[in-house]
Image: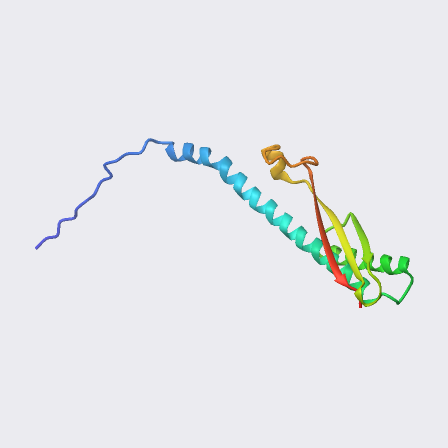
Length: 149
């Protein structure tokens, strides 16, 4: 008994170059999506670092309220916030303090601002999202309130 080999031929022929044209049409959209994901991830990372820096500054201020004078205390709390952000590679623009109350009900509010520079996606898309403040810089801010011990 002999076995016959059955050969299947592709009866549908694709035009040559079709895949290349489809790739060329999809590539710009794919690049915008990838760049957007990277930039949004970088914004979230910076926001988390700025929040942690504000927490660190507020913690230092809240746990050392009577150790030194007010100017030195704020200076050291700002140094703690800047050091926390610098550990993650984020530069802080400014740190502001706002103290309220007296005695056992006093609170400290620390606000930290940072600027994320060179957002590539804003240059690619232009001002589609109506973001004010320019195309290269995006300011992030975080405020933390803590009870003074």
